[in-house]
Length: 390
Image 1 (tube, rainbow, N blue to C red):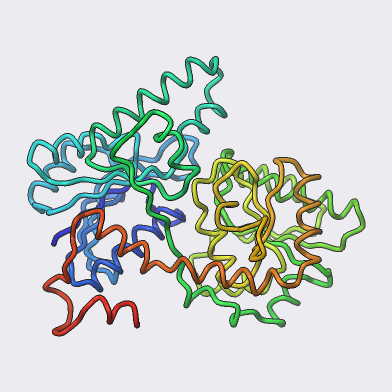
Image 2: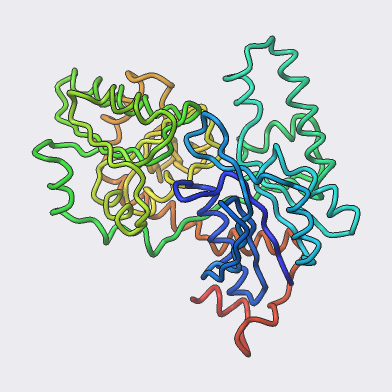
């Protein structure tokens, strides 16, 4: 089968969408299928990668987004799709790529669209309108999205709810996964830990985009709150985004290091594994791959109670891998002290992550596509049993 994935918001500094796209592509290739991904770029360019064939198309930068790119011409995009003649199409952008769904339906090509965001949450935060009007707008958009594509993919119960509440029948939940090899507790390094701590006692890490909806300032505020309580903590922040200058200004004078975007995933994995606690403060997170990567590295997570992250932290069970908190520095600081005092959470974190490998996500997506057989590109004698054993 030839699977084509079209994604906006993909670029050198993007995180979750890029990781998801790459891991799905890698998985489809292992099953012997052809995978092509079309993403924003500076010009039309074809490239063979380990994740499949990459096609970049001309794009423009979304103002105020900190570098997010959008494909410039959907008409030219559809011309490329016609030439590719895909068997299945995946889309990662619920806002600007509906024309792809309409074109595919006209030609009988099955489609799925990933709902990577909670539109209900974004509208509540950024649209200063009465709730009744916001709800009408959100429900209209979600119904339109579900009519345009054959299936809507949500990754968590949190992401699914706004579709379930209006009775969307073509909704499928597909949890994302984690790279259990790159992110592993064995990469914990006492020398790296000492280098990052710079003499402090508790090492906190924030890994994520510096954008308003993700509220990276909460991590800074929590560090300040902990220091005011006499806790000798230090915060390391990985990421970039439109709030970069604001975060740097807030951090000035405190034991906080802002490392920017780190493209070397092995280096990120070593930092995560060497930390004591990882932050996931975004209240609108529909999954948060960085949080799951922290768990895989053996580092428990403190997350916003209003996001989806708590669904896999198991905060109220015997396998707790972190804690959730209200969206204020005091609550986050309380949660940090709770997690720091529970040494079992480190081993719990890895155990939770091991239940969510990317192989599960790939297998589920192939079921969604109705692709039940190994493709012609797989090695001779290769079966799904080999994949599960590898």
